[in-house]
Image (tube, rainbow, N blue to C red; front, side):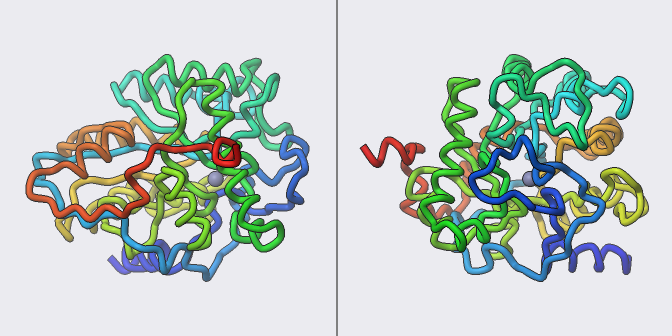
Length: 330
Ligand SMILES: [Zn+2]
């Protein structure tokens, strides 16, 4: 149990770099030609930061009854075709999408906008070209009933980018990511997960004003609306530092801790990684055996926020539909 406590202190008090270790990209350059968006995450940087520490709660939620046990599976940093459909050489194994299909699970993918440009299949240094472009992969995800949401266009750490380029740049990066998704899916993304969950309060507030819901791990938010950081990036590439005794067990331990607080709904934050795809069959089986039902993030929010008897305290920012920065400027 000591490990569980340790794991929680990691999750709660510091954010290990979830979105790729080195953000070496200079703002404005083409992420395609950089390794910054890749998951060389074994060398993830430990941060003492508490992102969104002063963020205001979006809503006060009381937990649903255990009869409504819900999981929203989410995967960041794609589309990565070799993870979604299975690699052939470097990363052999079943594709994540097939695993989800076989288990009747619909998931939500927080994708990176630069990938949704023509002929892009990923990042040559760390990923495998299986002959499927990221746009093709995104279209398949939609056809198979999954959701795409916004993980920015550049995948840069937004607080640093804001310091360097101003808040408007951050707003534009999120909006550019949303437009890239909309161009493929026809649907305006509603949810944003900032890389590593790092965002200034001002930028968060302004994104909410535009109608975006910003996902967070801040303890100031209701627990049901707080991402569960799977720490799966610790398993990328090599097992050293991977949550012990295993990734599925570590995630289940976090869920058990939340259940002890009366919370039976969970947004699980994973990444499009081969190592993560490999553990999904077992994790899904275990969670189903515990009575959990898998829903998309949209359905999750609808169900969790509409439970009878819940106290809702919406901020004014949450009632608007997303509006593009470009549209506001017109
Ligand atoms: Zn990321």
